[in-house]
Length: 344
Picture 1 (cartoon, one colour):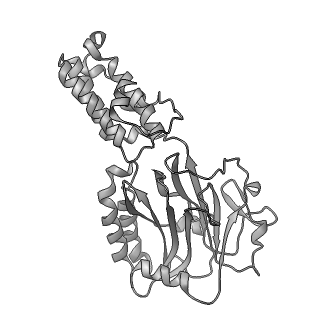
Picture 2 (cartoon, helix red, strand yellow):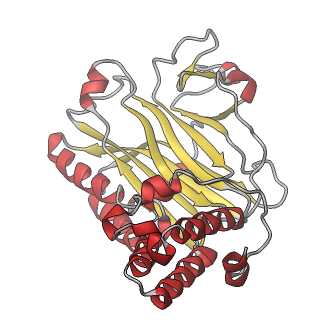
Picture 3 (cartoon, one colour):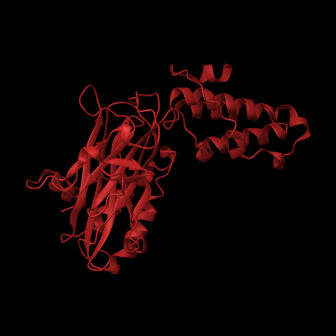
């Protein structure tokens, strides 16, 4: 049975129902806009904020914990699965702290509408440290699925296959959460907030009194929750990207265009500017508002080096991360075209 089958079986099994509880905004100590995310109007990021283990079993001795996350959503006109794996720290466990904190399950991706399916599982792997190295290797491989997603899409299936092969028949799902958000109507719109998954029942925890303070799940008295295993997820939305420094495909076209202008090849420079703008206009990791703003930034930045760039040499080029630091968001979400972005 694959890890995916194990999770599905665990979610569907009869018997004790553990707690899966959204934390009301009023019971969180940081302010945030909890407006519902609208298709093509923003981005989604999902965090495993905190994972806490009790000493209810021989963790890091007879059993090795591994946290798995799988997100299914629409991207680049297809449905994709983003899979992550984390190996928690035994040192933090022995210090009675959160075993894993602020781990990104899904980095910034544009929300294209439809539904987003979230799966997060704490897996109990039978065996001691012999599994630790393998888990670390696979989790490091999964970390290669970094934004922008278009540049890492080919890796996602390899990560999924690697994680699937890691688990055996004797391994168990110790704790898990499965949630589908978005769609039209329904009780689970896609909006920012925290969700707690606790290996306990309502006899053990007053779910309605749970709160979040300093990214820590707290009980009804405001103290950090202890005595039970739990995971705390955070759904984050953003109106604009803040990580354009990682868009190496656009950076390379911008660099080539500037070098062409600085060496006097105006025709090549113009062609490369058009290529950069075309790349921005169709980039699957961008919403239309950011396409407009980034296209203007790149076009204006390159123009500074046109006609010799006031004597500048290729080595004098402003680094890409400095150039995109001047990004100024816009709010025009209408569809874009290459012609519009070149002319505006």
